[in-house]
Amino acid sequence: MSERLEDIAAAMAASGKGLLAADESSGTIKKRFDSIHVECTEENRRDYREMLFRSNEAMRNHISGVILFDETLRQKAADGTPLVDIIRASGAIPGIKVDGGAKPLAAHPGETITEGLDGLRERLAEYYRLGARFAKWRGVLSISSSLPTSGAVHANAHALARYAALCQEAGIVPIVEPEVVMDGKPGDHSIDRCFEVTEQVLRAVFAELYAARVNLEGTILKPNMVIDGKNARKASVEEVAEKTIRCLKATVPALIPGIAFLSGGQSDEEATAHLSAMNAGHDLPWQLTFSYGRALQAACLSAWGGKSENVAAGQRAFTHRAKMNGLAATGNWTPALEKAA
Ligand code: 5MM
Image (cartoon, rainbow, N blue to C red; front, side):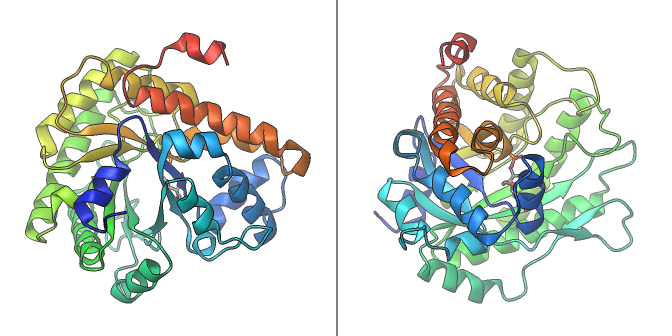
């Protein structure tokens, strides 16, 4: 495969495919395993992720890249094959989460700054040697009556831009993920408030990317959708699609090759329906696709339940969601396809 940033980014945003976010840090994967009563050991994490990456139909046809956590990038399958080689053999691109997580932002109660810039140049060089061709960094912004503050918006946008420039220097495509969370506290904000904040955040992010001289054609954006808070009324699928597109058109340059949404706590089917509605019948300058964690994995996790005899069932569940989202990435998903499964 070509090693140009632009070509890697275009392959990540290939039509009808999307990204699998399997980069849960140790604490997050423990929560997922707790929910199915599975012990969070290195072997169980390996077995779970090996099951995902060996889902041939899903990986070959619907997944363009996989975001990994540091441990997984270095791990070998039960038969000794590096997990990275299994991903590559399927035609998907291995990627790596390089942020150090969201930590309290000094003097900004209730807000966070994502850490991990110190030593990042050296870590990126190692990740490149290990096979990663893209990376991910997530900034987190919460909505309340007084948040986010402009201090938090700018600190996170600045960190995202410094990260993105370092990635490109290392030959790695940055996924820039400024997440305006839907499930924060109190989580009762309206879709219009989410629009206002997402617009403010994306404007700040692109101003910083520009100032940092980031090559937009070698960058993927991973935003939230414009959506009501988790504890507010639920806007229709059409309203979410229309307001999200409007917000992106107002803020995201057409040079960005792909926008890959996070699912953010939406149900599996909601995340698919929203993506499909955005792609159906809209003339867009970028590929719009998925980079889901929970909305791709929840059904698979429960079908597997940590039991080797359930691997085929887990793979069927993952393949189904990957296929549904692949169809949504071209606007061709319908609810009837879920029932037909
Ligand atoms: C898969 O979850 C990712 C890792 O989260 P932690 O660093 O907190 O363990 C997360 O960054 C993910 O890539 C995005 O938030 C999108 O995931 P969802 O579940 O929102 O689609």
